[in-house]
Amino acid sequence: ERALVVGSWNATGHPVPHITLADLLDAQVGRTPDAAAVGCGDVVLSYGEFGARVNRLARFLIGAGVGPESSVGVA
Image 1 (tube, rainbow, N blue to C red):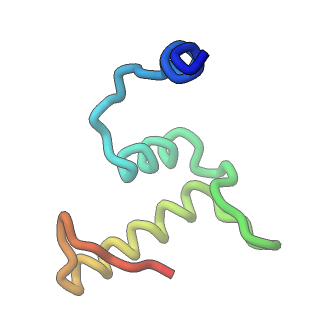
Image 2 (image 1 turned 30 degrees about the vertical axis):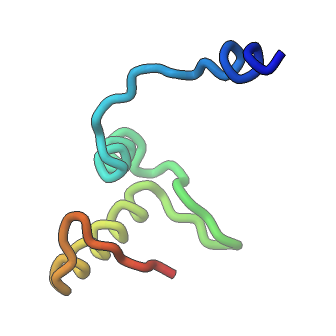
Image 3 (image 1 turned 120 degrees about the vertical axis):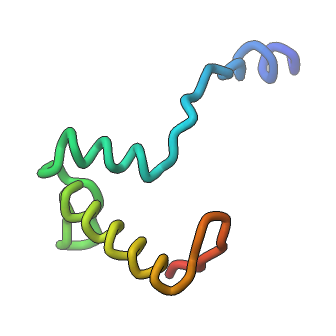
């Protein structure tokens, strides 16, 4: 029974492309810039707005000396 549950039913292995989260976001921004991406309360950002904020934060972090493999706390 364990082998069935763990091995067969959980056989979810499949090829995953080598792509970053940032690449996936950029692709979605390009496909649907006006679609709702994230929301909190009454505030809803489109993919275009969210992408612009992500890029602004990335530029700020790079300017502060953050680079690849750096750990950054975000609150």
